[in-house]
Length: 301
Length: 136
Image (cartoon, rainbow over all chains, first blue to last red):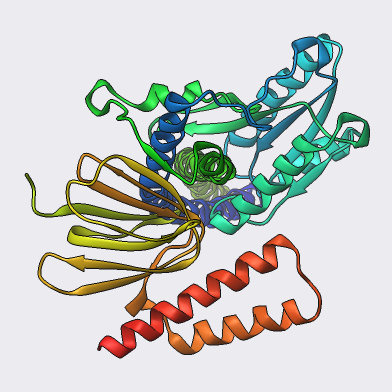
């Protein structure tokens, strides 16, 4: 009995220590998620201006650019999936959901008889793919919870370079992006978007009735402006995906850590009760032993 | 007719500067352009430069911008560039250091697009920071 009492106390202590850790992680995540949301909000004007400009050019002239040129469905031989996961665990289902969604896209690409190519952000995704012995075209890690714009540039430039390469030399014909959209603190959903070839219509959609596109004068000409715009547009898309995913990751982490803390609290309460019961039982037993011993002595006299 | 124009300088990490202005001067691929209030809709590719904004209260705001574009519509000017910065926030020593580093890399024969961009951006920042310190 005494051993089990000590055991119960030990377990309670270790759960208390775990609770302290998860509580700290919850607090850290909740302060960082606000920062991540602010960063995402600050990047909005950049995306908005680019969308507006791209749709202005698209409105004015027929867009014909290597990045928007749609290859025939039948001509697409290699299609890439670019997905964003986290570097560390303790994020609930965040990485698992993104990986699952990416796996579905890969399956669809395969079903269409094309060769899938993977681009991955985050250690979790890299490990998942490596463990299964699947090839990775390129991967980035170390910034999943606080991405910088330079990283977005790096990723976007490589994707564009591979997209522009001919298929025979290891290029890809289409790129899909999987990121996790931050709907609210309690809901984050993985989304799939076609990144390349660019759908310029996407930009037009964001322009509301209120700001109809006026007729612009271009300098030097629409093509040159577009040449400069599209790479920027793509970078801003990747930047947007990275920021959204980072915010989602932190929100998911906060929720996971909160429920871990709650569970630990419940466990502590249960263990405390059990330990008290065991202690009480021990005392009762001791008393009855003493009483029993005393009465046995009395009978002898 | 409005006598001033709304200016927004947008960088990737947020709005670098915004306010009402009497005129805006930036360098495009074709050369310098000045934008006054009520300009017609205009969209041009910008090159790294020190942009000048004459604000309504008579100050001259200098901004270092890199490649991007300027768009004008409805009396609103948007300067979009990835690494736009307000000149007085730039540390001149740091910017010069940065420029020297980029120059060294260029001299070593690294003439790829990225180094060139970096060099031009540093150049624009140094120029903007110098202009701003002259003014102060």
